[in-house]
Length: 87
Image (tube, rainbow, N blue to C red; front, side, top):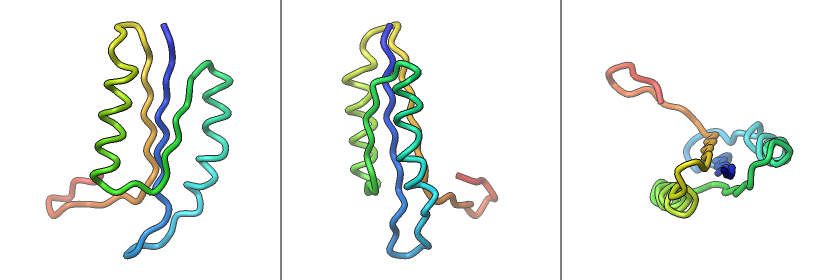
């Protein structure tokens, strides 16, 4: 059983305020997870298509072994749709 983490932080935006807290997450979280036995991949400021590709690649590469543990952490802006559902 192996542990793998994909950490994605989007902090710079053209149409929203930047999120300085995300940069702090990207400094602290990898070290914390590595101490817990995770092999960590960090990606920053991904577009929607690049994010989707990164997640798919991560799962394909590390999710094929049945007892591997995968963790995906995503920090970014949230939004609420017209129905009031938050993302």
